[in-house]
Length: 214
Image (cartoon, rainbow, N blue to C red):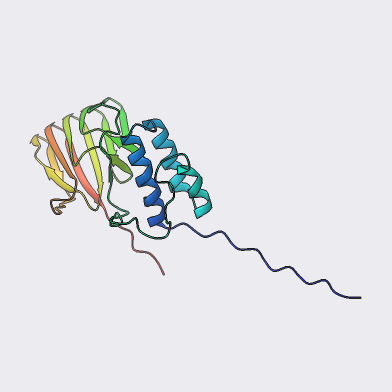
């Protein structure tokens, strides 16, 4: 009896790199700035981008947009790859809204994960707490101002590498503490933390890249 040959395994899907995801994200961000997709669509598609594990999963995300025919696994011509740890800056992604108000009165408020940061964020913490984590945030300008009023409350701000931090707040029986101490070049986005801490505290801390275990 003649044995049938075992069929050769088919080609495996190519895995997507961080650079591939950033290329697709750049197309989406430009499409939103041009008015082709909404802020909600941008957020939904970016979720799909950063969840994609293969190039086949990335390609359909921009099929209906100009510039979708990317050479994935290669940098976009004329564009340096973005640092994966630095926040993305997309002008106008708040749909015209320039100020966000976060209020924690005997309660807690947090913004973390993938979120869009307005150019000006007013934080009021009265016997409560507010947590802002810019690690996964998308900035809407090169200069973001966080104006804090903390009265017997606390505000904790976490920043990634790649963003300059300037802390200018006043503490009265309280304190503004800059544990990040980050300063980059003129091309880097800037986060300014201002305001008043009255018997309260405001802390800015950095989230450094984790060292990969071999």
